Length: 129
Image (cartoon, rainbow, N blue to C red; front, side, top):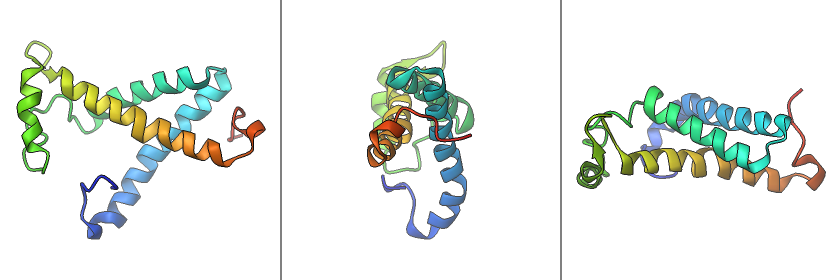
């Protein structure tokens, strides 16, 4: 929402669907990493797995060559065409963008922000019972 992809009138509907999708994923990634003792490397790897699933299966942006056609980001499609792998049907550049954004912005940044607000001894502990 903060990147400007939605108009203000769409915010309530977007919050109803995207908050559980992304917030739930961030919580699941954090809890899994903390319970297994993996720390930040595990968080990053699980976030990348979430990014692949989200971009590849859920919204299918990774394999849909016309995903950006009706957006203000349509000009980036020509750059994506330069790194497209025809046999696999996706752009390597878009894969790094989509998965990287999910890792950095959707999962790791929210976890880092919330963990910075709690006491140091709670940062490494699971939060759910």
